[in-house]
Image 1 (cartoon, rainbow, N blue to C red):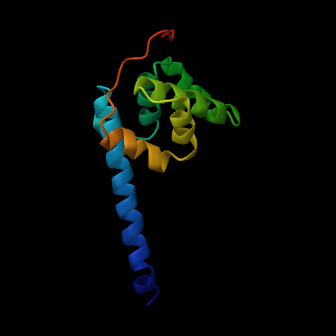
Image 2: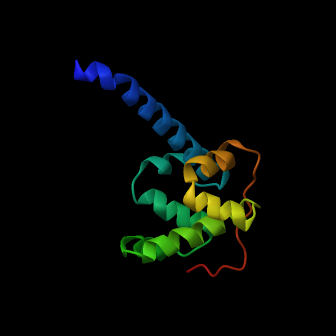
Length: 120
């Protein structure tokens, strides 16, 4: 009986999850990275760093408490810039990624490889 009560919530959750993964898949594909990378934990953060134009070793910074929050903000700003969006969009990407990632993934934004960022 309990499973029947939770079934609609589970179906809704899975639908939102599939939509979110599809949005990240499209974002990665637009940037020339493999879309399936959105499905692989840690590797998707590695790809996110590459898309933002940051060195791949920044992935390690995600495992340091409080530093990861700052790194996530910097990467969100860089991703927004790489897709020709404003810094306000970057903050939205950082705080409300469930709204802003689909805007990039399914929208008309095009990727321009970041310049001026030193790659290691």
